[in-house]
Length: 437
Image (cartoon, rainbow, N blue to C red; front, side, top):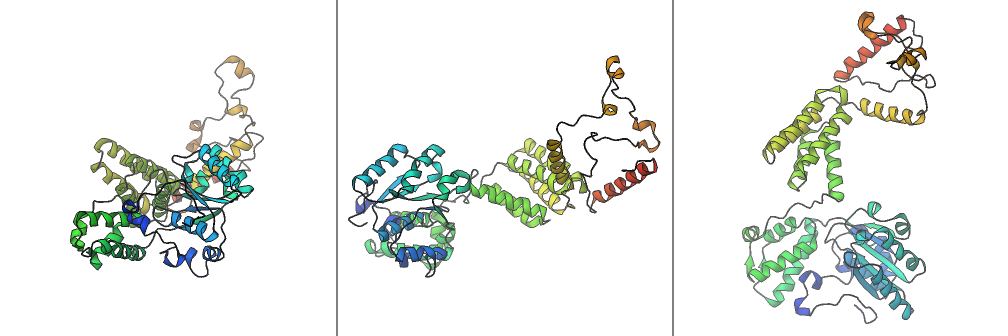
């Protein structure tokens, strides 16, 4: 940081600064990854070269460079910087930064980590200071900003999406870390295979990779091979957050794999969620929904299979009961597909909302009392079981609502049979004199 910069977070003595902090690049040329932002022709790179800064929301997983790019922006623009975390900070800390900025008649860059933790009222506090130029806000979040940040704040900031780093990027960073640690311990080194293993194990998170590298150094400042690194590293759970974007992305992938009749991909995404710690009962409920929404009456047994999978898990629990989820996922993926029932529901609900005042026709009303019968309730109703083939020709929509087709079966699976049944019913009613049949 330059002499003009200030931070609300005190730095530790050099000897205690983590390796990930010591290796944080100060020049764009040293930044690894995010080529869409840091490449020669990228807008962010151009802005940094020109010494400008703008309010941004950096959205991406941990350890991909959000903090580094924010500090680099402040440094290149020559702005004082205040670092806060929305986990512990609130309105008072924001106003303290504003007060210091105004006392010095300066624009400050406020880096607000975990900005999605701020509620709407806390977010609103930022708006006037961004508007009048007191603050340039750079927020960092691992959560989808469109869910967690209000529109007023988003409209004042540029949304910048950062991706997980590639294994190759992480390996380059690990190599730098090895060189840094070897300055203190010349015997410390990782073989090429060991670096690649650590990089792959880090799932695109550079901070995690460097923290693990430093832990290896503290354990033994010698040469590590891939087998030794593999034994040392504790199994790290797959990057998964049941309340965050990974959750919604993975369930979307599972649903679309089932819908597209790909049983192998359905098994893969189901396994990804289970291995990541997803609640099996949630997955069972989603499979039941898929059975109705995407298979429907093209295979009526699909819903039964999905419900049986839920029951199997309730009886057996984990891990044995999870086999039923895979059975249901494969069955649903291979079943004939129809969303006719789903579309009929949507159309029926829309029509119901639009015609909520329409009265039930008198002949469809029950008449349990003499007064109701005298008023005409149930008059003219045709009892289907008294008719040949149990088919009658009478109106079932309200008088004010034109009859219309809401359910249109597809020509696949059992719905082909249902379509034939509908065509037969229409012809039978037409023969009975229904002109609109």
